[in-house]
Image (cartoon, rainbow, N blue to C red):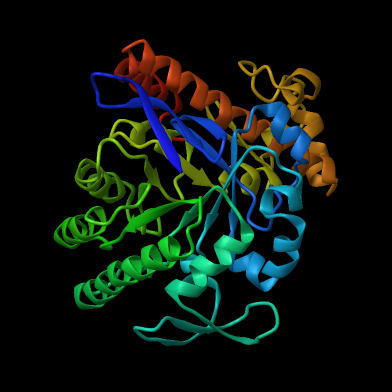
Length: 371
């Protein structure tokens, strides 16, 4: 189902490799462009391909509610439905249920919730979450879990973590029972407690998942706590399987997390910030809403070779944004995704050359943690 070839390990422990699943492959460390509702906001699939995107992430919760899994099944799965020929991953929707939907009840069976679209009532169980993702047909699918927000009480966190780990068993049984060729990843929870994360990692890694994710981080906790818990948790995951840090993050976050041996990342920030007038650059983040860019005829990022930086000035892009022109969102999203993908290329090159420590230090010093 899934083959993970670790091609090189840097002295820091950072790994460069390649994941192949159902005949589709992508290089690691990898950034997954977020196509929540089968679309990366503001960008076309051809633009994504031209930028070098190798894998996209869609969300089972959103697609289950709209347009519905049967339509996507009839289309041949999420890839054919959105006309994306490269690798795909779906998140189970656990995070979205707990963050977006008014909860009715959480039981051992699953979660009963109301749709954020029309208020209709739904029950999502570990088994149905896997069934939905089977119908969506992504190459990699995720176990159904119950994350907790920050801050959280230890008793609440322990209960949610233990339940998530029990649900993971049911997800794996449902997946194996369907004889699917999709890869299934388990998710380590534990909130913000090192002991609970150790316990969760122990239970999850006893199960034969194709890969293992670190979930429930970057949900409002202090940044240093994020990386303290990641540095604690990542070494507990099997070295020979992919490690996926869900929902992270800024470019500097990715640079830091690779030091812990993480192989996969996703985040909405490149397009979300792009739609809101903000661009990442190799020197840090810039906000075009700032009046200082009103007369700035220089490129968005002088050290970027994307078509936006080669064509448009900061003043022009600011004008587009202030005028409410759609081209502003498209241009800034395009540039930001380009920066993320080039960053991943540079990360892989640095790992293969055994110089990742220096690369990471230089990036973090240059951006001063502002990207």
